[in-house]
Length: 61
Image 1 (cartoon, helix red, strand yellow):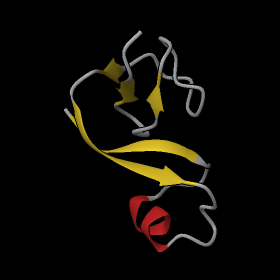
Image 2: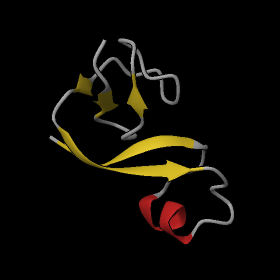
Image 3: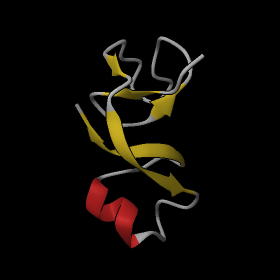
Image 4: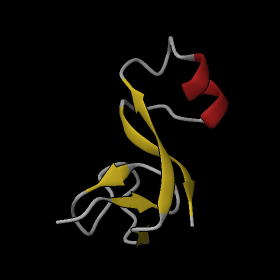
């Protein structure tokens, strides 16, 4: 199964539903990856608006 990125929150998932925002709007066309372990301490996560730990895409098309 291929990785897909949620078009709403940009979380990278393997299924057909995003576990973060429960959206089914997913795309296989994304670039860049951010791994967030501690969103409260991460400046990049704060700038990207990420509040939960996980793997996120930088840009989703």
